[in-house]
Image 1 (spheres, one colour):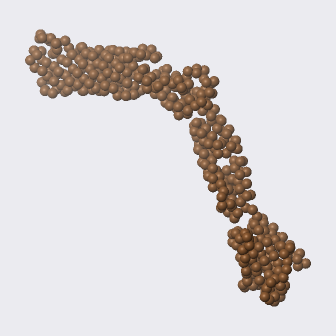
Image 2 (spheres, helix red, strand yellow; image 1 turned 180 degrees about the horizontal axis):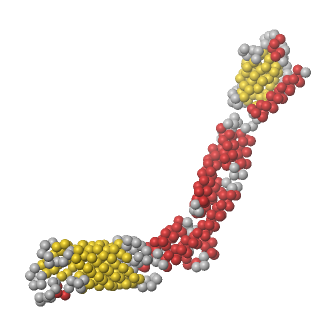
Image 3 (cartoon, helix red, strand yellow; image 1 turned 120 degrees about the vertical axis):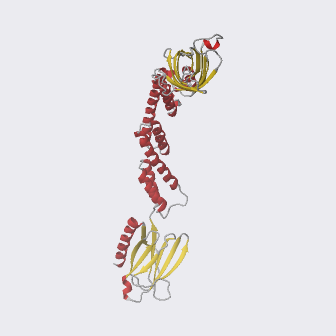
Length: 434
């Protein structure tokens, strides 16, 4: 009866400690004998692995006499218990394991010189948590896998000193971050970036079928966008909307539309193969060729009807121009009704709106005006700032030349106030641009 009661208690202790506490207590019936004590003391020997470091308490003994011995990887705890009082038959030995923060109670019915042996072991911790983490990772349950790996790394007593848990957790953190970036870029229709993120996720976990599916979807969408970029860029170029064409060409290059993988698909899908990115002309050289950026015009004003103006009129950059005006009286040696005059101006040109429907350039400059009196005996000077516009009218859709119309308003500030030089002058011009 005594032995049956002890076995039942040990069974329940082993059950609860194995399930809830990861500790297993079992009595070793193969080892029996007499307690080698000086008196009538009984002995309890508990053998456990040295990493468990057990402590003991008794409900009827204020102090316990314990001898420890290290045997290989185990510690043998030899506990001497007095047996000279009847209440010792109600003795319960409490075994506490600080490593697990767990305890188990063992009832002891010992008579003089009795000896009992118990074995203490621990269920595996690292291996089941590690294997569960690996399985969850393959199922792409990354947060659950990370939790299992963390337990295997931090909470298990049998974690091997050399392991790759930290690396696996780092991989999961990378995947979780890439998933967030991929989702945001995918929802914003930025398929090229999303393609890169999903490809990186799949590289970190080959079992992630969702990442693989999204990668292929983004890749196909990007190929379609490449086709659209190239087609629209070509159309904008044909319509001389170079700024829009440039933006789409840049977008195509950013999306790597000239990659081998994309090029293969584009060669099949695009009707006009000459529209692929590889065949895009150098944008700057094309702009120089088609801008017809140089203009020369014949200039006329009432006081100086003979003149010429020439300069650069570029789409995206400042340029310079020069104008020279005169009248024939300036070269005459005879007295004339109109005062001899000449005018020279130098300035800058700029396009305020780069649009084919607004082919207007602004001009601003400063010049010099010189007039002699009718008799040629006196010479008068003026500082002559001016502003104006020039309009280009190209010949054809891909022009090499065009018509140029120019107007200038000039305000003359006399350097010596005699009232000879009129303060306002207008000039118009007509010519060509090429």
